[in-house]
Length: 383
Ligand code: MG
Image 1 (cartoon, rainbow, N blue to C red):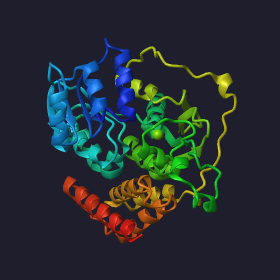
Image 2: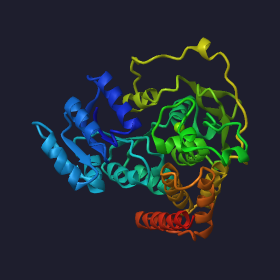
Image 3: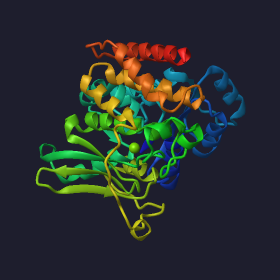
């Protein structure tokens, strides 16, 4: 399988390369990309010898050219470069592991070129789910989720037919602030928010996990991927992160997928489908995880989750705006410009000011995204 990895220096991207390296007879890297992390990209180029690489700016591209020894890969720049590498003729599978809305256009290009997509970038489906799924149908492109919950559901769905699905049950770890009160959340720090109890992930998704925005985005992602109505997708907090998600069928049987909290497993599954490869990584030890518990999600303390449900129910460009406002708010929180509890406040305000567009072409989505970012920026700067 010939693979392009969009965002290869991030958390999922790096773990994708670990999977590829573990199965050299199965997978071959054709193209890699990084936004800023040039040192890491250089290391990856020396190991994987891609034919094409994309980097965030022309300045970094010039530096890269000087620092790479022969043979020199083709060097592309920015969003245009990502779009070109995602649709290269010899690429069969595109892993989209960039963070945020920047993943949308390269993913669309890959779909239009008929590639198989291993999707780690949930913002793509949140921001433009209808467009992306319509294009995938039109160009007969397969979308395989890398997100652990959706990988679990994808696997459990092999046990029944679509019309037999009663509901999808996504599990949530609850994040680092599970059990805290609204008052306690007002005082949490950036360092505390960045300490996820189970998963090691990039900064943006770690903050999304702390606000539970991540789980709301995943409900929207599941809605588009599996074509199941929103009120048939439920969430259960499961602090051990062993049951990755479940499918309940009309006959009352529930299929769950379990495994260690290790992103390399869902990545490996997405790359190797339809076969399964013998994993070199640690397996789940039930006796080390003797108790699996489940509890209800705290909607009051974590309003971001309900904001996601509201956005997808309102439809139109509301999910686009929700996602853009969240990206801006999380960025501001990572810069310590706002407090943790201001993240949902900013998103709420941006959504309240939004007048949804009915058209859902790419240009409408980009316009709504642009508007939401500018509006969120004003709110953040106003303080
Ligand atoms: Mg997930």
